[in-house]
Every structure is written in structure tokens, then in C-alpha cells.
Image 1: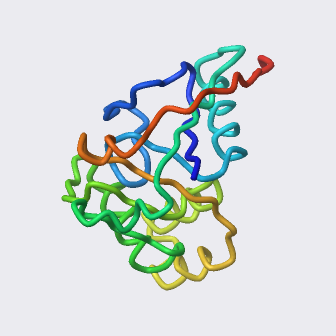
Image 2: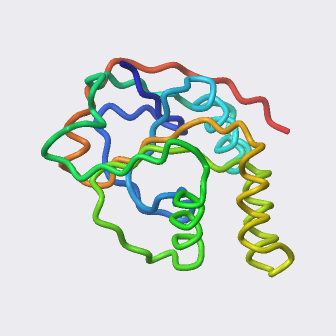
Length: 166
């Protein structure tokens, strides 16, 4: 199967990324099964960095990678209470640590982040946060959190994405 990573530069050899805009599951290398999601992420990065183009790097991976016996894998099938608690723990503590090699689950979008912000400001309770998550159609993300997990990815090519300046 194919996984996609959206960024400003082509990535042939993935690495653990530590930076200011760490994703929902913490530090690592993020991919998605959706090329459309990867293209949107490229455009978001282009807007943020005022760039005119970016790249979707494409990787091959075994279809059964989530069942890799030698990896500690966490799968969130949907944006439910477990997923929300995990993401919220990372949001409240950017240094939040976990021992998973690989995490698969929904990626939060702007509406989901707005709901988290309302919860963090005590404007809605946790039950209402979960209620709001249930109506969202979210794409997925795959976090490769360790070097061991990165070894599953095999570079397969790239696609340039044009980003008109706003």
C-alpha cells in the first residue's frame, strides 16, 4: 500500500521530526493513506512559510504494517473518547511521552481543534467534546515514532504541489 507525507521538500529517507508544529500524536514522521490529505498539508505548510510549492513524498509499506509483531502499535479506529484523551494529553503537555513505535488514527482538523479549544477553556465538557467529534468525517494519519518503525517505509517517488501565494 502507499502512504503519503506532505511537506516543503522531498523526503527520500524519513526521519523523526522534532519541531514547533508537532502533530496530534507527538514527535515523529507523519504520513497518511490519503494523497488528498497530504496535498492539503503541503498547501497549509506553503501558506505558513510563504512558499510557492511543496512536495508529497510517496512511500510503499506492507499492507499488514499495523500488525507488525516486533512493533508496539496503537490504532485509533475513530475520533472517540480514547483518541480524544490521548490527543488532549499531548495538547496539555507538549512533552507528553508514549512508548508506541507506530500510531494510526484520525487527524484533527480546524473544527476539531476549535472543539478542543472550547473544552480547554471550560466552555464545553468532555461529553460535549466527544459529541462534537462524532459528527466529523476525519482523514487518517500514521505516526512513525521510532527509527525501528521508520524501517518499514520504502521510498516510491514524489509529486510536486503548486501553492499560489495568498
